[in-house]
Image 1 (tube, rainbow, N blue to C red):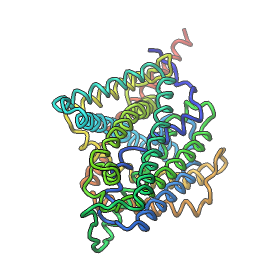
Image 2: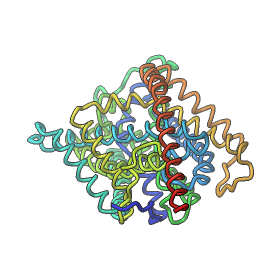
Image 3: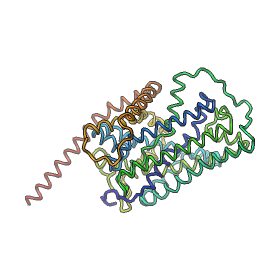
Image 4: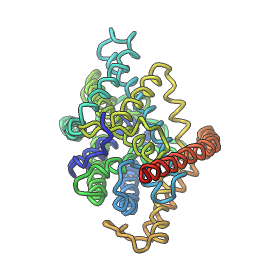
Length: 453
């Protein structure tokens, strides 16, 4: 391995692929069933998806200013550090790295479970399959940035086609049947819609759109600069919003929403209702492909976070190595080690719950960060200016704050975990900062001594 910096090898097409690939996950296959337990009337159901899409797009139109001002690899870490300074960046950066590693472990495990549904003989070896899958994608990353990017662009295109194909299948099924499929016992009694229930479904839909900031993880590796990353993020979010709205429209015109309740993969339940039992297996296959795609992209994302933290002296020197093919190889290997360890011990859900509150707070922070930089850096170059600002900023900050308060109140254990981790992180950050400063002094002294010689 060399000590090269990351290389600017990525084009705008990759930023769009990263956005699509990071957002479209199992959420869109599951969430319709979760919503249907509370909202099972087509009009409010569709309104929920449209309004949440508009809110996320509005948020991105604001945060795109911060993304375009931060031409550095690292994603959320780089954005938060730019807006608020080293310590907040450190806290969210390490949370992001851990969360991505835990997410990869979870998705590799779920992928292996779905594979066992298709081939029951794999059932006793779920952990082994998960470890092998994750290891293969880590090794692919070491083959170079171009390969990882090409895989992702291909995978994101296929994922988009999968969503379109599923929507088309439901529309065609409804057309052939002359309307909504007749599913016995599919109607769910509608009770009183409480604020907690409504908040839960809103949060579920918003999380299904989560990941719109994904291209920012690669800002320093884009040939066209950070403005292209901001534009690519917006284009990806628009594509995903359109795909989600069309797919959900296909659901409501083809099956009663009550038919989705109780299905782990609600979309599989919809396909079964239209085409008969067993037809939903195609959704399981689609889920496996999506999970494979996420292994590739999340290795790319997580390694960039660890690399950026480490180059700032807030990680390990071993994670700063970049091979001659543009991959932060040291960071990939360390990320692989943590991911495999989590698969082996099966504690990925605990880690994900530990950092949940940080990510909810992060959305508020990104929007407020635009206000902060407008005040602190009024003359800084802004390749992309927030649309409708400051009105849009106030709307988005208020919306995300409401989501954050709701999540903090309803997931109080995660809130407590977050507070404890914040307290623990302070002495760790101070130690790393002191070590970094001592290292800088040592290098200066050595340089001075060599100059005297």
